[in-house]
Length: 440
Picture 1: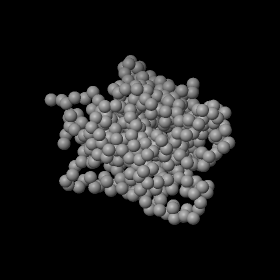
Picture 2 (picture 1 turned 45 degrees about the horizontal axis):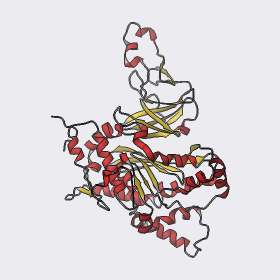
Picture 3 (picture 1 turned 90 degrees about the vertical axis):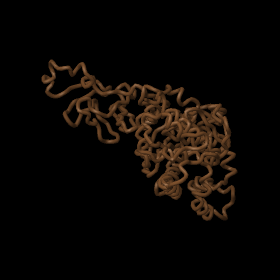
Picture 4 (picture 1 turned 90 degrees about the horizontal axis):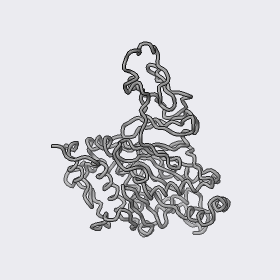
């Protein structure tokens, strides 16, 4: 199938209650995602705490484009394409670091100020009388026009098409608010490094699984059975070690996950666990709760601490857990290859146990060597292969489907409803074909 000039054919891949396997398998569709979908949507780039000082940079690829997030001398943050204006050499090859007061290209030593403007070039006299100053190469680094820093979370949109930041995310930004406000000082810092896992599957498999509450009872049965065996004989109200506190709820049962509820928003965003979640019954920390009441007032502190969703998805690249304070970043590499990065936050003014919970959860659940993640990874890669089988070309998303369910963009539902996944694919179809019509 030739999809490049067929937006109608792309839209036909996403039906109300099922999607075509090409969404996961097609190299051509992945190339078009890089060109259109990820360019038209807002994607998470990094956190401001990763570049605390002037000259600090973070290099990251989005949609196959090399980007450079840089802390400015005045404290602001700017994002550039990571390429010299001369020959296109990447200015930095390290993932992060400090460049000092300027960038220096390693190829021909062209230099640029932190704001991207030209600083100096060797053999300057050789350019006298040429058109260098008038052309793009003489203007310095190319900066991104669409950058948003929301409570120190940095997002970018590569294309001039697409909605503005606030319109795109809307109410799902409250998930970030809840995470940041868990600091009595309203400040988070990424700490402990990144846990990275390259999975040989399509990125959409991982993202939809974040909203899948039916798989834990079967996929992670061995892990929860082992945990229950170890904890057998202890009283129900006995304080649990942190690992037990985090793993036992995975086997809570279908009714638990169904009643936790979910909420979908326009543009593919969602919150799973609007009533409660597997994170709702962590041990209380009285001193921390007192600090929260002092910082936010009793009513607001209670509101913040009682809200512990399972996952909040800021489609298409970020999954947030307010408690524990952890995020996952989904970075597509190919049609059948996805990088997942898990990070933990340290909340300013909060006790170390909050950070320890985040680190423990990431190791326990997201590490490729964990007793939980290896189950998921095996099945993701199995799905990627299984979809190549002949016969059925469609992936079912029928559970709890109701005709006309997308007439309302924001709505609450039960926690096992595949509406949360259908909502993602509906957004994929929209942004994949935004502003495009079939050509003759």
